[in-house]
Image (cartoon, rainbow, N blue to C red; front, side, top):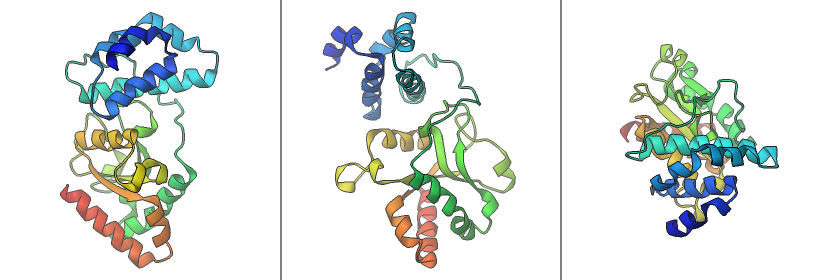
Length: 228
């Protein structure tokens, strides 16, 4: 497949080429031979010349993800090749379900911890692109004072827990495991030293009717994350 892609690379629209290369990264196969094809003036000109502005924005976003993912995982990558994302750059929102549950979980999770002030929502990881995969749905800080700090690629994250909320579309067929982008997201957060606590949205939504059981689940998942 890589040989065919090499031969026909220029025939692929930029948005499709980037998504295809990312699909290799999701399964931990790193297309180093194609780096020179996408980080060059000709390809970037094609990217910005796409007729739909939505395609341009999406392609730029996914290219930033490719650059960061290769930097984190691929030996001999040589990047990053893109400038740092602007703090003003907008980021697509997660699903309404994830947004709602992340806010709803602050109180019960705070009760488990003994202090709501240690819980943050929708936290952007520092020194990484402003991409949805690098946003923590919730973050449990080591202390209240630490909640004033930023955590990400270049920080000590050993005592920090990231909570990832998974709606049904994050789950692979059969409900076991995660789809490629979400599996990579978890992999990257662990590689940066974060403890990762994962919750399925449907289970959380059901337990919201039973606050004691929800707190039990959160306490169990939190303990498991700390041991991981």
